[in-house]
Image 1 (cartoon, rainbow, N blue to C red):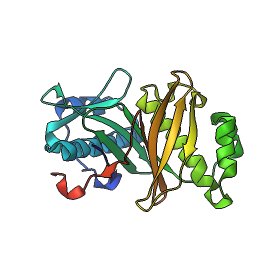
Image 2: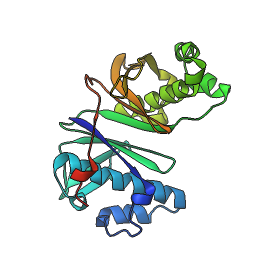
Image 3: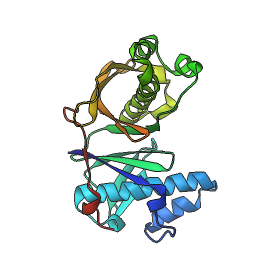
Image 4: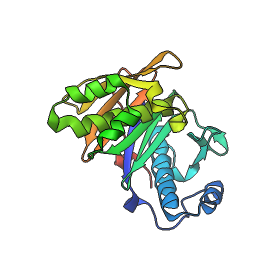
Length: 228
């Protein structure tokens, strides 16, 4: 199962009593207000997402960061048999959970105009051709989609933006189907491997998910099955 959950920063409790002591200690070390807000949103949506996928209480789920910075979930100090990826943008958080565990990455981006230099700096020649081939009305969506797919792929291979974004190449994008999901493919030029993924529009946002093999799009975790 690969599933996702979205949440807003105005849903995050104002207090910190929903955090475990180790999580509170991490939060205490963050000085910047925005960084603290983004971190709290990420932990809130991650605890809820993992709890919904695993049938746990959010209060029993601890979210830690690995040596590479990727989040992982624990219960009573032991790793949970699931992998997760997090993203946030404009006050909205996204959590994708995979059970059983697989290396996975997700990203959430606001669709907005970007300067031409953005594509020149971060996209490959073939990716710029994908953008040029899109209808004018889809230009901003396509640029956002390609950037988001790169971020998802780099998370899935546990490097993040420490690697040049042009070392992963979005080589295929299909239109969204009746379920709202379209397929995408990303080639890792360094590891000489290929990742599969999916994308969708959700309001003003593009959502992308990528992993080594993903024949079906992620399902949406229902809020009703998340225990407060």
